[in-house]
Image 1 (tube, rainbow, N blue to C red):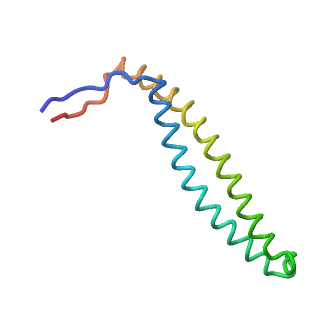
Image 2: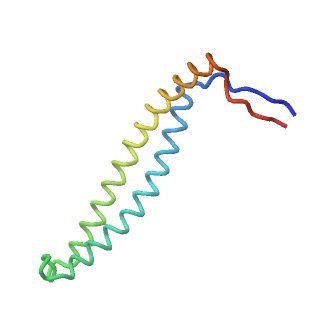
Length: 108
């Protein structure tokens, strides 16, 4: 068994990886939230005091449409945020690893 140390991380590559990971996570979260927003829009459309009645389908469409728009925004901003934070995180890791040593891993 060989013990190796991660002493440097490429900031741009790490930023790309983190951007894709966050985009996937936010896509999944956004789609789940879209389903709930459609459900809530449908329930609200059935309540006459909430403006339901003749516009019953409008509430579901508005909920799903708003959820999809939110999902797209979450994915885009999540990817941008992930890239920026990945680059910053890699720079910080590289600085700290140069002072105290990197993370030790055991490779077989």
